[in-house]
Image 1 (tube, one colour):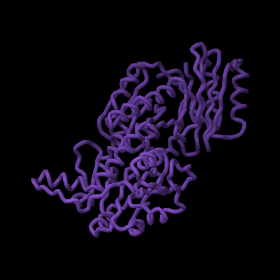
Image 2 (cartoon, rainbow, N blue to C red):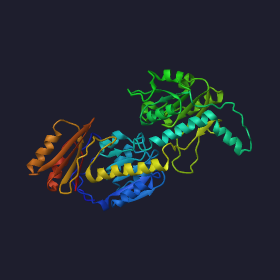
Image 3 (cartoon, one colour):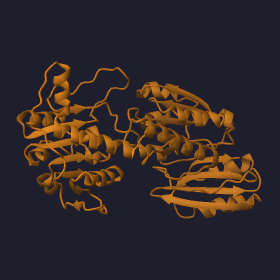
Amino acid sequence: MTMMTMAAHTFENGAVHEPISKIDDEDVKVLLLENIHTDGAEFLRHKGYQVEEISRALGEDELIEAVQGVHLLGIRSTTYITEKVLQHAPDLLAIGAFCIGTNQIDLAATKRHGVAVFNAPYSNTRSVVELAIAEIISLARRLFEKSNAMHAGVWNKSAAGSHEVRGRTLGIVGYGNIGSQLSVIAEALGMSVVFYDIDDKLALGNAKKCATLDELLATADVVSLHVDGRPGNAGLFGDEQMRMMKPRSLFLNLSRGIAVDTAALRKHLESGHIAGAALDVFPVEPKAQGDPFESELRGVPNVILTPHVGGSTEEAQQDIGRFVASKLRAYAKAGTTNLSVNFPELNLPSDPERHRLAHVHQNAPGVLATINSILGDHGVNIEGQQLATKAELGYVVTDISDEVGPDVLKELAALPETVRLRQLS
C-alpha cells in the first residue's frame, strides 16, 4: 500500500490517519475470524484480495498482533473491537460483523478512527425464528426430558406436563426483524401474540402491542426475548420480571446473554414457577470450539441449552458470508457505505473512467464548500459528488476526471475536520 506522508486530523483524543493513495486489489489484506463461511472468503479471494482465516475468536492482545497491515477485518460475536485495538490498527478501513449484532464493536471508537462497520441485519432472521419455534414446541412437549429418558433406557409414554402450543399466548420482547417474523409464524401455528418494544412498531397480523413489559409478562404463556445488545438491555430480565410471569410459563432467550440473570432463572425453574426455558446466548461464552462451558443452568430439567447457534444454519451462514463480504468489497473498492452501521450511507455508482476521493470528516458546517474550494484552486474538475451525514460524522464522495497529486491530498488532509481521506481508482 502506498501512503502519503502528511497526516490527517480526527476527533479530539482520536487517532491520526495518513491520507491513503490507491491500493491495488492484490495488496488488500483481509483477516476473517470465528469460522466465517467459506463463501465470504472465496468471494474476496476471487476479487484478488489476500485472505487469512482463523477459526476462533481472538483476545485483545492477540487481535492487535494479528491485525497489523490488515485493511478489512471480519468477525462474529465473540471477538471484541476496542479503542485499544483500533489505535493499533492504522491500516484498517472496515470491519464486517458476520452476524446481526454489533455490541462487540466500540462503534464510537470506529467513528473516531474512520473505520466503517457493516453487519448482516437480515440474513439469519429465518434461522433464529425457526429455532425459537422448535424450542417452544420442544419445551411445551417436554421433548428434551423424554429424549434423555429414552437414551437412559426409560420408556415414559405419559402425557403429563405435555401441551399443544395452539391457543397459547406468545409474548415477544423486542419486535424487530426476528421478533416480528416470529410473530407471523407463531400465529400460523394457532398462537396468540402480544409484544413489547420501546420503539413504536407496527403490529403484524393479529399481534397486539403491550404498553409495558409488565403487561406482557402478566399475559404471556411463553416469553421470548429478541432484544439488541445496547447497554440498557443488560440485566433486562431478572428476578423481578420472572416473578411477574404467569405460573408454569416458558421462557426463551435467543438474543443477548447479558439481558438475563441466569442465576435468578435457575431459582424460578427449580421452584416450578417457570416450567421450562431455552437459551442460545449467555453472559460469558467460550471463545473457541471445544472450550469448556459453564452456566448455572446446566443440569436443570426441561432446559434447552444451545451454543449460540440461532443463526448457525448452512443457509444463513452462506448468505451472511456473501452479504457482508460484498459490503466490505464495495467499501474498499468504491467507498460505498450502504447499510453501514456507523457511517452515513452513500452509493455513488463507480465509473472506471473517473477517479474518486472518499473523505470522512467531522460533521461541521462548510466542510463540503471547503473541499470543493481546494479542488477548484488546484484546477480539479468535479464530475460527480454526494454528501451524507450521520450524527457527528460526515462522508463525501467526489468523482474527478484525473487523479490528484500529493499537494491536493495534503491540503485536504490538513483540514481540522478531516478524519480519514482515501483516493480510489
